[in-house]
Length: 211
Image 1 (cartoon, one colour):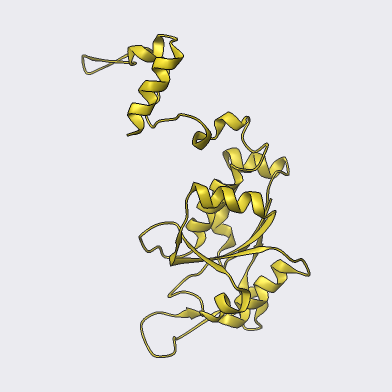
Image 2 (tube, rainbow, N blue to C red; image 1 turned 90 degrees about the horizontal axis):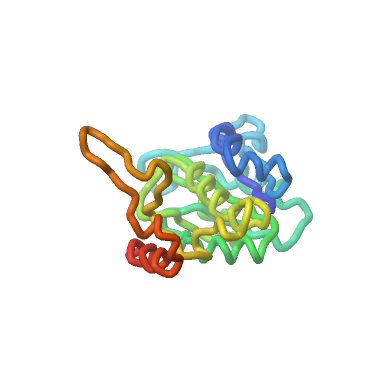
């Protein structure tokens, strides 16, 4: 899967993409992440102006963003375009799975400041997506989250398909050695059921902990 990211801050992705599972997936060519900086598509490097109608902050101009998206698309067709927006459809595992199965390439458009000129959505028929009911200072973090969630769906990114929590009974409570951990004169033990080897009872315990 290829992720084309339109952002004015491509360096902000470095630390996340160069570590752990995503770094290995990129090295193994399971996924690719390419960047397109709107600043590269205007002569003066100016990507923002004051909004029409007044208001605080600055708005990213339609022209440099459109050119960056066009560069990402090239002459290829059938590439999904995601427009990150707090008013978009809430992103979840179901959307991630659908997108990763349907599309081999997608463009993720990251806004900053007061947002991107709304004509971008209309020109490219982009799907608006939000990662949560809150406002961030820019689209880099949402893009990283989306890439992480969708990359996990790509075959070979995780060691086994069983690693996908959504495909098995999983819960937030997990334990490993030692069986007993002493802290400030108090013993903290692993639940007995997890040491029993009784798979049915363990599955039942996990289901209860999911609630």
